[in-house]
Length: 164
Image 1 (cartoon, rainbow, N blue to C red):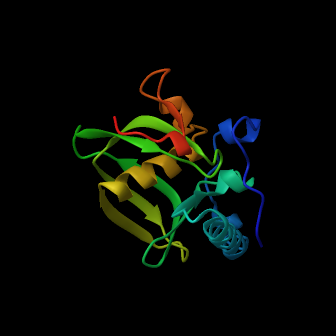
Image 2: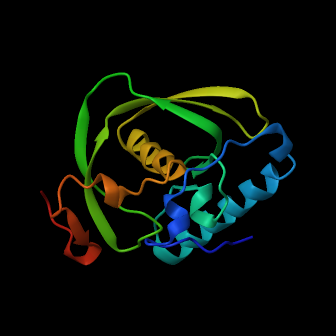
C-alpha cells in the first residue's frame, strides 16, 4: 500500500525508532510491501528515490528499504565507519522534495543488519551507497539531512542547484 511520506517539520520524523522484535516479524512483510510501494510511487512521480526509512511513512521501527539493482531490506541495521574519509555533497530527501542540503558523509561504511528472513547480513558500502544508507540510517535516529548541513548557508532549491 502506498503510504504518505511525512514531510519536514512533522514531529514524528525527529523520534528515535524502536528495534524490530521477533514479535514484529508477522508485520514485516506488510511493512516491506508498503515501503516498496511508497518508494516506487515516489519514483514514478519524481523520477528519483532509491531508498526509504520506515519512520518516513510513520512506522517507528528500525527498518530500511532500498531498491537499486534489486530490493534490499535492512532490519535493525547498525552502521560502522572504517575510516574518517569524508566528502561533501548535496543531499535530498523524500521528506523535503526540491530542497538540497550540503552535508558531509563518510566515503566508506559497513552495515550489519538482519534481512527480511531475520538472517544476519553485512554489506560494505562506498561512495553513493555509503551516503545513501547513512542518510536513511539517520532517519532511524530522528536525524534529517537538514540537521547535518555543513553551515547555515547550505540549503538550495533544486532548480537553483549549483556546483560548490
